[in-house]
Structures are given as C-alpha cells and as structure tokens.
Length: 451
Image (cartoon, rainbow, N blue to C red; front, side, top):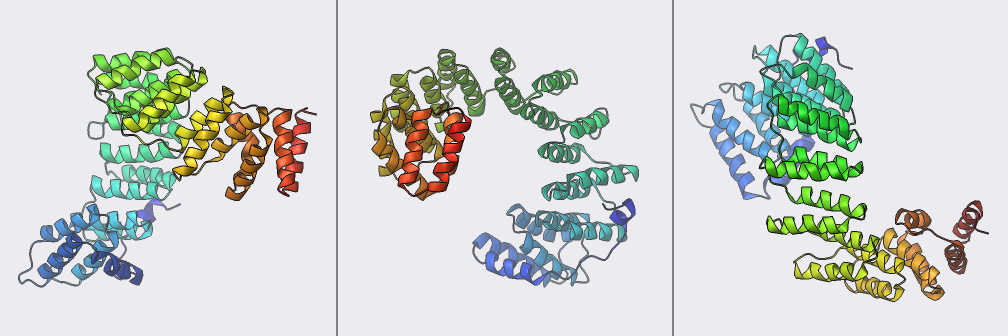
C-alpha cells in the first residue's frame, strides 16, 4: 500500500513514452479523418511562433481523450514538453493523469501528480477524482479509499463527483457498508453533499445484495434531505422488491413514480412485469403492459420473453404462442431465449411435436440452441417416449459441448428428471460411447434413489 509520503513525493514527469504507445498512435490515428485533423492541428500549432496559449493545446488533447485515443494524446504531449516556450498547466497535467488511468498505468499517473506539486500547482478536485477513478478501474478500490483519507488529512477537498466515483467503486466490489459509511461522512459537507446519483448507487447496491428494506430507508432519507429520486432510483427499488417477493411494495412504488411525475422507462416496466409473471400474476402483468403501450414505451424482446414465460408458467400456451408470433410483427426478432421459453412451455404441456417444430425452426434460422433449449426438449422427449429423438439430441449436445450440465439445467427450468429421463439419457450416452458420462449419471441416479 502506498503511504501518504509516497503519494505526494515530487517526482519527475515521465517524458519518455513507451514505444508501443507510439506504434498504437500511428496505427490508429490514420484510420479516422477527425483523428488526423486533431493531430495535424496540434503539430501545426507546435511550430507557430509565438506559440498559441496552452488552452489551445488542451482543447485538442481533451478531444482526443473524449474519443478514447489515450496513447495518441500522450504521444502528442511528449512533443509538447520539448517546446520550451510552452508550459503545461494544471488542465494539461490532469489530461495526462486521465490518459494513464484509462491505460491502467496508475504509477505513471501518480508521477504526474508529483510533477503537479513540483511545479507549484495546486491539485484540484478533478485531479483527485481522476486518480480515484483510475484506481477503481484497476480494481484498487481499497487503495483509492486510503488515498482519499490521505488527501483529506492533508487539507485537500473532493467534490460530490469525486465522492460519487469512490462510492461507485466501493459498491461495484460489494463494499456497500464502506460506501454507506463514506456517505454518512459527507452528507453535511456543502461542497461535497451527495446528489441523487450517489444515493442511487448505494440504493442499487443494497437492492442487489437483497437489503431492500435498508435501501428503502435510505430512499426516504434522501427525500427528507431534499434530494429527489430519479427513474434509476425507482428502478433499483422496484427490482429489489420484486426479487424479494414484495410485489405489493413494487407496485406501490410504481404508483408513486406517476404521482411524482417520474416517467417509467422500459427497464421499470420489464422489471415489474417479470416480477408479476414469476409470481403467476400474469393478468396484473397484462395491465402493466397495457399501461406501457399507452405511455408509448416500445416493447423489446425482454418484455416479450418475460410475458411468454409467464403464460407458460400458468400453462396458457395459446396466449404464449400468440405473443411469440406477434414478436416479428412488432419488429422484434425472437432470440434463442424466446425459442427456449416456448420449447420448455410446450414440453411441460406435453406438446412435444410443437416443441420439435420450433427446434427445427431454430436450425433453419441459424440460431444455435443452448443448454436450456436442449435440457427442456430432452426431458420432454424422454417423458413422451421419443427415444430416437433423444439419442440424436444427446449426440448434438456432445458435439456442441453442452452435455455436462444437462441435469442441473433441467432442474433450473423446473424440469425434474425422473427415472425414465435418466435411463434414456444414460442409454443414449452409452450408444455414443460416452461411457464416463453415462456412468457418472448412473451414480447420480442411484444417489437420488431412482433405482
């Protein structure tokens, strides 16, 4: 771990750019005319006498950074340093830090920080935020938190963007408690007071960790403190309540959104529809769908798949099939998941012929079946006594490398393999000379008491 002294020890700026960066620059800058224009303008200004102000060079370097051409920006900055009459300012050096951080070169980024201090410049909030973001991007979140403590101890201040960046980094690695503690430290700081993005980041992390009640408490806190929730705040909470099986609260929040004039987006609708369908409440999901259409939110394949799965769950295959056929008319192309949902539904409804037809249709459309597709169809075929079809599918699965997790995938999709399923697949494996896998399944069958 870097100490406070090592973080702020003035070091010479690394003026020698590694050769691979220059090669990267030359190989990429000529492929896009706007990159060529930026490089040409920069080189032209370098040879003007008197030289233009540094702000002109910063503008070009900043545009290259926005286009994510970090090596190109650094290559140009090397030439800038050789011009004695042009002095980089704090904005130039911040750009260098940003480039190094995005290229996972945080040690070079800290060398630039040392150069800032050596030149007598004062690092600003952008400097610290960029370094913290770089450490978070490189998976050094704890180091970023310690760096923050060093910075504050030395009398420097971060703004709400810097704290938001650090809190986001903590949440992404599951350090929600540390993120909340940091939030408590800055809630009353005027310059760094957390905004809706910061609160929402922690609320989202709490919901993903199934701490939805804690997230709901924080949601109320932010309102009391005068921070208005946005659609992302509500989306996180709706998701959290749906996952926790608290559908009534999820629907209640949906109503609150309308009262607060926060417009639900496609994610809000799809999350709520998914939660209702998984609880078997497809009729209420239909009402949400109707509202979605009324609001002018376009249906995507997630919505279609979710509703089809809901209809299959309650064995309303005619409704599911109608939706499946409606996808193309609505401008949405069914994907592998769409077909797998329908094949699973047909098999559970003992409509194996329809399931096989869809499977053949997948092949015609060059859609590659996944383990879910195979497991559902094989289970249905086993229970329907279609042994020859099972052997063909087991062989196809083996060729595609799917056969290892067959039984677990069946159970994940609500297909409980019985003795018939086991025996049929074991026989098919022996037929294909997959003896080791067949014996493994045989032992699993015995362990389950299916003799």
